[in-house]
Length: 388
Ligand SMILES: Cc1cc2nc3c(=O)[nH]c(=O)nc-3n(C[C@H](O)[C@H](O)[C@H](O)COP(=O)(O)OP(=O)(O)OC[C@H]3O[C@@H](n4cnc5c(N)ncnc54)[C@H](O)[C@@H]3O)c2cc1C
Image (cartoon, rainbow, N blue to C red; front, side, top):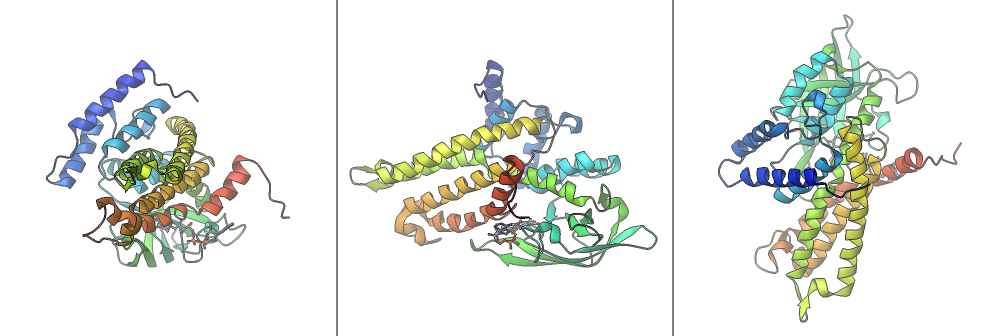
């Protein structure tokens, strides 16, 4: 793919840089700045929803414009944004939601007014997601479902207003059938949330228990029993986002600068051939995956789900993120072990171990790497299992 930037692309790049500079955070109320940033981005030309198709208010950018945007925003840093509504549920509603649901939910997602969480995984259903058991029973009068069951690893459930949730409405047929995609508020009776503290020491994930939660039928997305199809499309969007290629490009530059600041003999750690070789290998892999991302951006700008190729991005992108964290920890040497300490070694080393520990999850969430390899083998390379 040609990623030579045309004159128009370069003009766009300058415009994006100008916008990011003008609207950079300069202190004060961070939340007010965040909301204002999205408003300004919207006024600028729907830059607040870069990946949404034009029909739903997106800017209609070319793949190269997306590429420029991702790189520049990764470099400049943009306000924090949760992907669940904007990049995951949004595209599902656009493709499979009713017009009423699109009008009801998309504006608040766009305005970052409502936080969503993803209720897919269960204690007995992670990689084998289709085995999920959270039950949704339709009431006799057909007006609502009653949901009972447990979800686990639910990111940000403790701050979420709503959940998009996979439920089982039938046990007949193969397990992928009989799954129904429901939307309901988190702050209601019958929803209990318990925190899970991860290896990195933070609280982002939770176990969520549902006891007789009533969900009106109008909150069902698409047809009953067809939720698996919608869920898969959503996962493809999720995997593309998790790959985080542009952030890795910036993080790799950061890693090089950190290594340059560590003295070794007459030079720096970056002059040590074994370390340098690892950085070079990482950089080459990153460039290769960047091209794959461009292909995926071309699909996204046409308004379709990214397809199974998103598994390549997830697989390679998360491997690269972990390698960056590992080399950062290595660059900090023994000081990285002083997790959160304050009195020795380079500043960056204090976050080294925490970053490394937290990065272990990248190859698990959004579908474990082994499972992504399986998808790539079957759906991208077309190799069939030898098992009968
Ligand atoms: C930090 C974090 C945040 C998360 N956020 C969410 C969220 O918001 N919402 C949500 O629904 N879920 C979330 N998840 C759950 C995540 O999607 C699952 O953890 C993941 O799909 C793996 O499932 P599991 O944990 O049940 O592991 P298992 O499926 O039990 O897998 C255990 C191991 O077995 C391997 N394995 C399983 N099947 C195969 C196979 N067929 N071939 C080869 N190897 C295999 C796996 O690769 C893995 O190494 C999150 C997880 C983490 C860690």
